[in-house]
Image 1 (cartoon, rainbow, N blue to C red):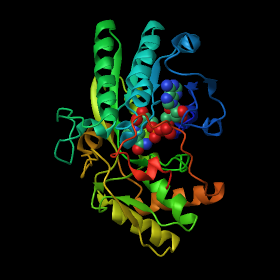
Image 2 (cartoon, rainbow, N blue to C red):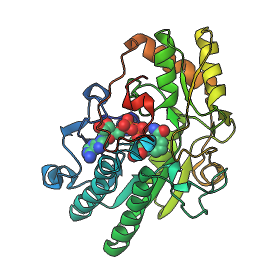
Image 3 (cartoon, rainbow, N blue to C red):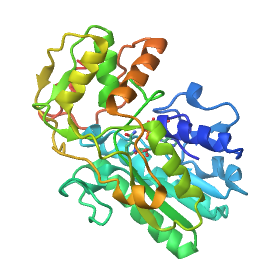
Image 4 (cartoon, rainbow, N blue to C red):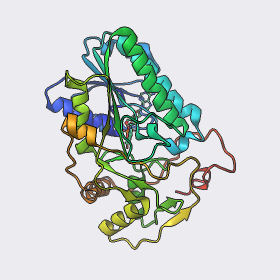
Length: 329
Ligand SMILES: NC(=O)c1ccc[n+]([C@@H]2O[C@H](COP(=O)([O-])OP(=O)(O)OC[C@H]3O[C@@H](n4cnc5c(N)ncnc54)[C@H](O)[C@@H]3O)[C@@H](O)[C@H]2O)c1
């Protein structure tokens, strides 16, 4: 498994460990943290691009999950090389190493960003229409996976998670994870920052609801060569509603700071879960409010933090959001 020190990868590792499986995982710790790696994982700090440094870990592996990425959609417009290095390039390195080692099945974490310009709710039969470099990189990774798995007779599935939230998600990264960013700011007495008018609509998935379906994509012998949206479709909310819900939970007097929209941000983006419900038994058990309450408890326990501007902005011009260029989140 790649990205095992990250949010989704670490929860997925937990799920496989609790099934009594052996889990080996790698992560370069660019976005993740060692403390996220569940005890029991055979962990190595290594970059997916560095194939020879982890090839031995793949021998004898039945299913390989590729969760690693720098999943920074907004930032990708300004740091496309960084995002594709840890996107399509890292993906190609990992697929190559996994196939060379004789892995039987690869599960790839794509993103709802693949749907881009399509009308929501997004369904798996829509052709990808990526609008930003992160989405382009994710789609290129999907194509690379299909091409190489078909060429070498390896099974694969493509997971399309969307706006997952939960404990272990970074909340000090100013470039991504809107719910955690808002919680971190409000816990520090700061108003949330909203790009545009906050009318953008999204649907948030609590991690515990997503993981069981993700596991099925790896282990179900009858599910192969498929794309699945993973996450709820019952509670679509605007970003402003999200801020209101968090403020309500925190008893915080809300007066958001509105800043100009980010270039290429898709206005309304949410998925249909019909296919996952039908074929994977997907069920939503967490309402948004319940999921947010869990994250708040986790961030409170860890303590709110200063934001860390860890990633280079490659393109700085008049379109670069001031929030990033001037580190004001
Ligand atoms: N969280 C979401 O809402 C969401 C939504 C859609 C898709 N996804 C996808 O799911 C996957 C997991 O996302 P996440 O939210 O857990 O992100 P995350 O940042 O918490 O985890 C990703 C991990 O990958 C590691 N990583 C990055 N580049 C690497 C490289 N080159 N080699 C090795 N490790 C590397 C990071 O250090 C990090 O620990 C990603 O592929 C992401 O694109 C996530």
